[in-house]
Amino acid sequence: MIVEPKIELRLQFLARVVSKECKHLTTTDQRLFGSLFTLEQATRLEEDPDLAERVEAFVGRFGRLQDTVGDKLLPLLLAALGEKPSAAIDNLDRAERLGLLKSADEWMTMRSLRNQMVHEYVEDPVVLSSALQSGHDFVPALITTANKMCAEIERRGWA
Figure (cartoon, rainbow, N blue to C red):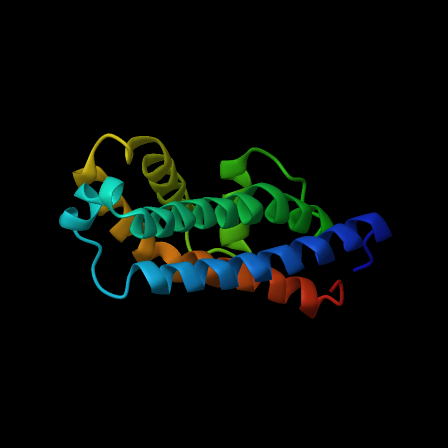
């Protein structure tokens, strides 16, 4: 399938960005979750700037990768595949049917979790520790999805 040069260039750019974001998230995930992230750690974030920076990096990188893949790469990839991009949930459903995404529902759960990590961590260490651990558990699925989309771009000769 031939795509417009402008779309192909954008796909190439986004694939490069996603690849870098996957590496950064993996590094941060390993640094933050050498072991289980505990409630005790969450309660001492204000006294431990290094830990706070690692948490902030994880939350930011998790959210950024999810945004780049779900809001930028996926709609463009669908368009290149001859699909009409639509609302986010419809795009996710299409990606699931195409085998690019394990589960649209799982992706929406990750999105909700990301919002929880971003907006509630300042107030409630219990919510934060639970959300961070759940985010950590979702990292493999997020990276797998990103890699599947990048592999599809490469497989089609658009990379």
